[in-house]
Image (cartoon, rainbow, N blue to C red; front, side):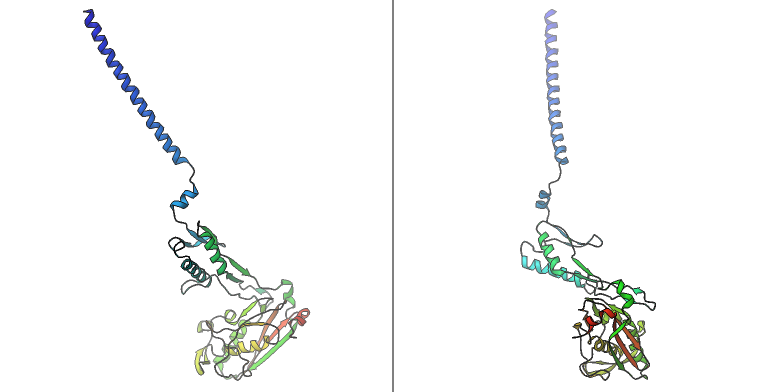
Length: 331
């Protein structure tokens, strides 16, 4: 009996030992799995290496508007040929810069001509708009520099305000430094109305030092919505009827007035036929959206454009403060 009991005890002991061994093995396996899981979590929690991202993802260049901090253009250098065809890539970037600066058929560009300030009837200033230029070559250079690694590039905008001082405003009408008068037939009602409207549009305009004057920008569209009427005008050596006919008398009168002071002409065109209101070769034809009369005040002082429209005449004067007269006199 004792032998049977001992045998049974040995069997139970062996079973218990096997069970302990299995439990130890399971615990070891679970510990290894937990350690592996812990290592995976630690790897996921490590900070992302920007160099690794650069290697895995293509560089992206974002062009940003500095006035609004908004992204206006996104460029993928790799897809655009930065690595495979650098010359074509640069041409592509130059086209992007050109469209952003000058606009397209559907989107306005950043470039804007200056709309000059003017005085109202009581002498208060009516603010215009500063000149804005997007420097295309600088934008191209910035994008090319950023194309290797990607990043954001600000649009290089240069904004120029009108070059006059508020202290000069009360004195700009003191002295007439130049003047010119042209005449017209008082019976040409439509044509005369167009002269009157365009003359009023340039009256009391302040031209500061360094400012660019654009007749088309100041006067604006010549259409029925703005009160302009049908009248004879010269197009391709023919006299035809057109809305706004006659405003070239205003632009030509202005040319002959400012031509008596030192200015730089940026754009000026002649009619295809002689006109009778100014001497031959002394005209300045304009057409909204195409031909313009533009000049720059290259003097260090501002001046004021004054117009006087009468029954059969138009007079345009250039005035300035008495202390500036000598600086606006041609030598």
